[in-house]
Image 1 (tube, rainbow, N blue to C red):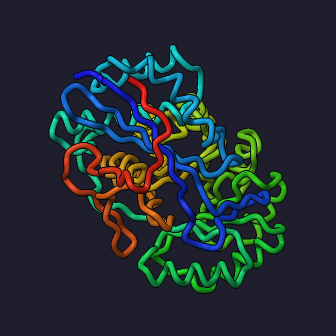
Image 2: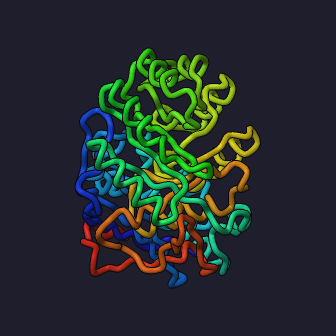
Amino acid sequence: MRIESIAVYTADLPYTGKAYAFAGGRSHQIFTSTVVVLTTNSGLAGYGEVCPCGPNYMAAFAEGLPSCLSVLAPSVIGGDPRHINCIHESMDQALTGHAVAKAAIDIACWDLLGKSARLPVYTLLGGLITPSMPLHRIVPLAEPAEMEASLGRYRSEGFRHIQIKLGHRVDEDIELMQTLARKKQPDEIWVGDMNGAWRRDQALRFSRAVEDLDLYLEQPCRGYEECLSVRRRCRHPVKLDESLNCLADVQRAIRDDAMDAMALKVSKFGGLTPARVIRDVCVDAGIAMTIEDAWGSGIATAAYAHLAASTPSRVLLNTTDLHNYNTVQLADGAPEVSAGRMTLSDRPGLGVTPDFKTLTLHDVYE
């Protein structure tokens, strides 16, 4: 099997709510997704999707992804998509960095590998270990009453894992969390996500003020060293996200005892191939993981869901259903969601098919 052509599509994903807002004054209503279709000489096609969470969340710019893919395409056309490590070697030779663009091709290769083997991708990633995956829902930064209403709605829909975006003044966030905590249920898992907005003294002040609340603190400060300082002195478990961008970062955090959990965003690390390695390192180290991505529709959700489903339940903190955060869907066959949990079909590959009526063709490379 060899790759004969690569088609690049884009689409806008409007957020279902009023605004997806988080610390630092960052707020987005529409996200730009990039979908890659790899066509092979066997007649099989593989699909990948990546979607940065706006231009100011991580080192990825949605409008630049098609340009990156124009550089990557000649390096992988003619290659066997089932030899995914070889595909990565070729991509790294062609373009330094830009992991998110490489992830789109990597995910499509895994889709093709599953289809050629007539197996779901989760089987190839280690087997179906956690068939029913717990989901978290994000409460965006807003006025306290609006955040309280969102939390109540998600709870009524069956969600027991809640990620609460923080980023008001510290005293306001303390008051907000104390107010919300009055209705916290014993079976709920909460994460307070600062998205790197606080100084270390602010993070410690917050932690000490709500010390009786069972809560993860996610990425309290911008830099790794700051988060490590907080981890060593705070009263809550710490979850890292933005300060982890490669396997070496994760290994360092484990050596330094800098985290109790991490957010494993598949596209940020370059796709399922490097994410699988990081997943396995964390499993061995006993680090809890939220396996997800920055944003996306059904293809992106399916990709990380297959990784999550092949992860032992003891270290899978949760995942999420990003395709349900949008008002439009880009693919058929996305994972099923019910009562705060997500399941996958046993269809070969990722089990999803793009809805080309919703996509705009950008380029085709042959």
